[in-house]
Amino acid sequence: MSTVIMGGTAQIVGNIDVSYRQDNLIAGDMQLVTQSIILKGNQGVLQRGTILGKDATGLYVIAKATAKDSSPTSLVVLADTHDTSLGDVSGAGAYFTGEFNASRIIMDESWTLDQLRDAARPLTIFFKDVVNADNPT
Image (cartoon, rainbow, N blue to C red; front, side, top):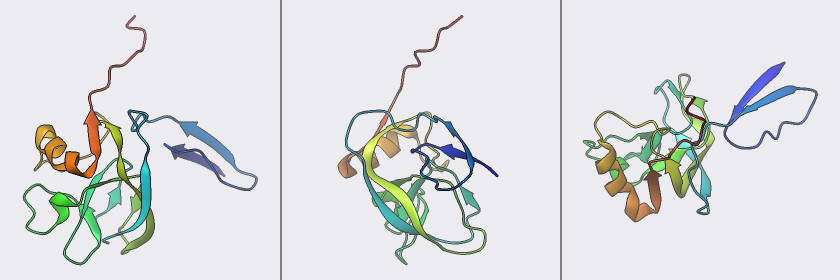
């Protein structure tokens, strides 16, 4: 069995081949605050880095700038990839504060990056433009 972990440290116990791939979502030294949330079902596969907000039922959905519920003002960043096709997902991890790479987040097309930055700033979530240090040759 082989597993690819995106993001955090692989913590799987057992006889498993685990490969780790850095995704550069985290973009600073600011203390990350995480908490478990419940993802609303029937949203398909939600990728790590997706910007979510809490809807009127208290479940987390893809945050839309145009939503009439609290989702545009209760923003979090999804910590791991989850499939919501079969229903609500309990125990999903989310970042409630932190500095994130603006080019690695996944946001609904109803947002511009500047709008999202303004909405997230009071929540102590920051989206930074990250300079790549790779050799340009």
